Amino acid sequence: MTYPTQPTASHFIGGEYVEDTAGAALPVVYPATGETIAILHEATPAIIDRALEAAKGAQADWAAMSGTERGRVLRRAADIMRARNHDLSVLETMDTGKPYQETSVADATSGADALEYFGGLAGSLTGEHIQLPGGDWAYTVREPLGVCVGLGAWNYPTQIACWKAAPALACGNAMVFKPSETTPLCALKVAKILIEAGAPPGLFNVVQGAGAAGAALTTDPRVDKVSLTGSVPTGKKVYAAAAAEMKHVTMELGGKSPLVVFDDADLDDAVGGAILGNFYSSGQVCSNGTRVFVQRNLRDAFLDRLSERLANAVIGDPLDPETSFGPMVSEGQLQIVLNYISKGTEEGARLVSGGQRLDRPGCWITPAVFADVTDDMTIAREEIFGPVMCVLDFENEDEVIARANATEYGLSAGVFTSDLQRGHRVIGALQAGSCFLNSYNDAPVEVPFGGVKMSGVGRENSKAAIEHYSQLKSVYVRMGRVEAPF
Ligand SMILES: NC(=O)C1=CN([C@@H]2O[C@H](COP(=O)(O)OP(=O)(O)OC[C@H]3O[C@@H](n4cnc5c(N)ncnc54)[C@H](O)[C@@H]3O)[C@@H](O)[C@H]2O)C=CC1
Ligand SMILES: NCCCC(=O)O
Image (cartoon, rainbow, N blue to C red; front, side, top):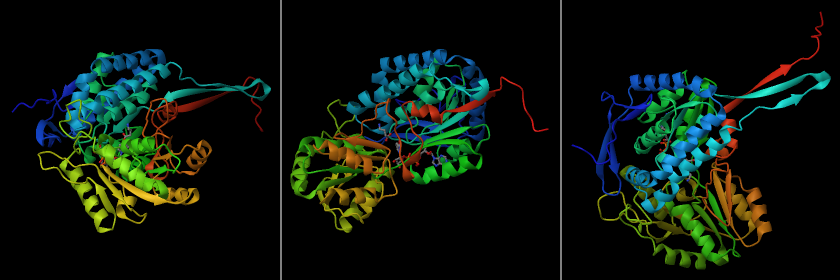
């Protein structure tokens, strides 16, 4: 059988598509219909070995090029991605179920932004000169780490591949990227585009597979750094395995982020922020503000306006540009979400809208809003990773800060208020890596992205990412005689 989105082969290694049918079959399902759209194969040990050898073989020559030359390749790749945005967006939609309305502006475009931004930075990555007493001096050299492994989640397959590859390659590293087993298609296109842009074969390789393939990559002695986007439980395993060999890590993990709405906020902006922070990508965004704290005397107006605006959601064919809300990524993820919705009702939260599975093929659920949620409820404590908004009441600033911070997570936080002093004061007190004031879920490449507490280690995007894909060598230069004690 021929599938419409079947790639040339499962893996991309050494500049070409590579197949090894000895690996377990990996069916790819279009979540909007439940149909199989491709069948790939998980990487065998031989495939993983081949990818790591290819990366190791390409890395030294790539690192020996000037930053400007490396940057040129990345910027060319960005141009190709932009030129192919339509096709890449359709593929992203097929891989994830996210509506084309989103994928056409937030996936390949975001990946291209990362390639362009880090391509631009590559030529400016230098060390520094440090003057010392007696005429001595030192200099630092910014060196690549070597071979980096990228492990992706399923919600943003193109974006995650590019957010990891772009800074890694800009710094002179090579990469083996393993997409999520749920969404294996898009990263292959990124690999092909990098080759077309002039990247040497082996610089960026893609291998498929689930946790076992990720673990094999993480523990391989040829690997110098592991960058994971995934859940906290996986993050703990990957971090521990990397630590055993003292490897560098970036951990972009989960969250249960607070979005605080004061009663002086612009109501429509606050409702818009809550919609963006809960229902974009059908709620499958790590930074989502899923605990929406609304000051008590605004609560009813907030819920009314939210219901009015939710009625405008267009739930349907994700490839139709009018559709604004797609299916969950998989039946498994849909079941997780449905279980949380049952638990919310059982524990006494009030389901004010949505939360029903739609009677049609595929993984469809309507956006759910719970009111009267209390801090101890399961739906207020655990990451759901689906379209479930919890609305919690609060009275005053100190109270909401304490409650917002009472979580092991610390990825994001948002505040809506027209009192800017209060806005900055509250943001200053919130324990989160990525914060928003009168906005939610913006992720421009120029701004560091990442979490504190259990939500992660390190930062993606911005100049901060350079620190996580390079290391400094210090060289002390003595200009006089060496005076030893004997
Ligand atoms: N902070 C961030 O930037 C983001 C975080 N996430 C988080 O990701 C989660 C959802 O994505 P999932 O794909 O379900 O996450 P997951 O943690 O199940 O898997 C993430 C990746 O790790 C791999 N993996 C699983 N076990 C492994 C092991 N033992 N060793 C090495 N690799 C292993 C998987 O195959 C996959 O490629 C949510 O918790 C979400 O919050 C998602 C997107 C962005
Ligand atoms: N564009 C959203 C970044 C966060 C995430 O990948 O979930």
